[in-house]
Image 1 (tube, rainbow, N blue to C red):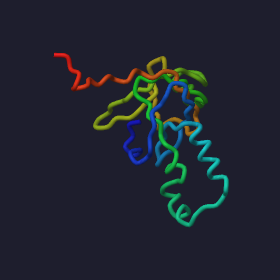
Image 2: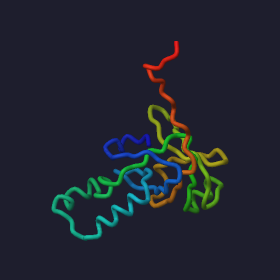
Image 3: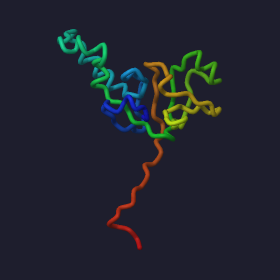
Image 4: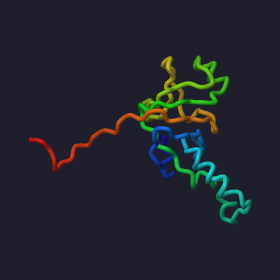
Length: 152
């Protein structure tokens, strides 16, 4: 993910077949693994909050501190599910659609967006928290040449 507000959040790399969910981190929406969120929910079940978490949660919600974001590289194919009726109408798509992740450069900044089959793009940060996503295909990682095995 390319959002600067996520720099302090732990990250992990996406894998084909991952079940992800759009999740609110520090005021922006990004991808998290469904399993990580379920684990966080289980750890919160004791119902006890420390004095420190009571003070800090309004500024740094507990779940944002422990749930890692999932780094999804541009070019990844995703199945976007639970698309809201408003977005379906605006993008001319159904409730479930295959999209690709793209990096949009605008002025001096960039952001992640999903590109629909009709070419329309929508920023990931605008997706609804709780919206489900499945990783269908990842682009191959670029091969970095090894300096010790260079062919002359």
